[in-house]
Image (tube, rainbow, N blue to C red):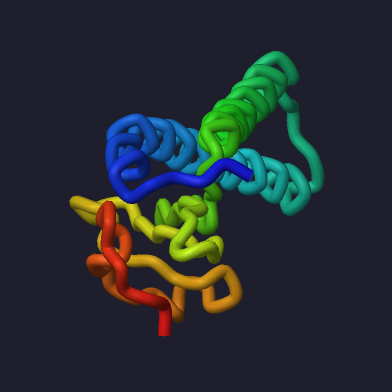
Length: 144
């Protein structure tokens, strides 16, 4: 598993924000298109059937698949960097980091200017704590 220093993780934020934007926008567009297709199918069912423009429906299905793939590809790129996507809808990312021999997670949520929090692996988002001097080079403090 790749680990990051605070500075390395911070330097990746512009790239990750761009990938998150791509993934989120594609997911949202796919959701909207899926809703439109579901409404259309419901109208067919309620009306007892109707003429369906098969070519248009196929184009929409193909577009839906492409949007879903675009979102998956962006998430896979983030994963390949070594960063964990914890919640795509909110843009929550975790960066594995070694702190005094223990793997912890630097925690960043889309919209935050900087990585300002961390948590132990088992604590999750609810256990977020502010970044402190231990994450800076040469800080001698110990984990509680």
